[in-house]
Image: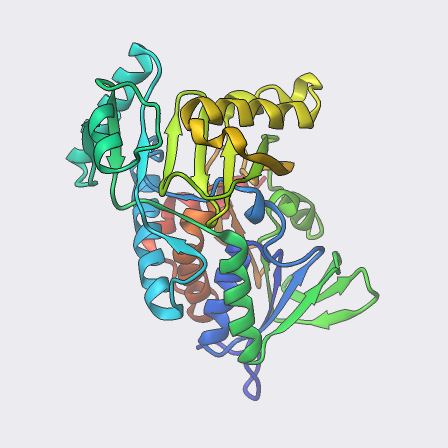
Length: 374
């Protein structure tokens, strides 16, 4: 393991404690690093808590290397559940998807054939079979093809972050909540030296991990590092119901639905997201999501909207993760990605190893931060 000096372990500031920051920090901690978790809010309560939190690779076919990274992320979730226990955060119950028009249906079936050729498990059922065998509460038409991905699932992100950070703190890591990073100090040789916080404190560190999600470009700017990000807001709604009527994450026409515990569900829709910049009231967007969900699951007629949030997704400009060292600033690393829920455990393991050993894994070859260098 690399160390900060001959006498002490490497000291690493993890900036932003969503799922990516928590996974990186926990992996660093368990291998002997001295980790400081820094978050302007509370760990796990930012974008991680307002994500659809669907663990998958079926929606990641645009580039084979990205698909492979997400498959590794799914496997890393299963390994993590064995290591820390699955209770309260890990729900590997599969995923259902069907379309509402022939063109979309043909595209989904074509994608399913591609995935099968890549040895990714997918089953095709009819709506009748799904209601009979998997989800009786759905209104999917009887002869409609429904894709079932049995190896996918969903994660309660806030619970996972809390579990990982608590374990790291029990092992000696430090937690700084409610403090934003104001400055990153650089040594004469260009390497990371200090991190200054909004509470007036200044921390001596050997390295920083920029896992600040939507704020990652601002953190990068503190070392004059360009990190272009997309602006892509999304609205997520939580509803309360007496008992959750479905057991799996699902993509129905116009709406995405998943359980969020025994009496809560999460709703999202890309179509509704497209209305955010029109000036539509977020409360109205939430109501539209609720109505759409009830058309798919009539039992939700007695449910009520509990919370809604418009959040910025942390997506680098080209749509792919930015993970690893920035050679021009020794000691500075990035862990910035959409699909952080799927990728968190694998990125956490690979980046922690890179920080501590200097070895770069080939799984991250297409996603190095250098591609955004000026």
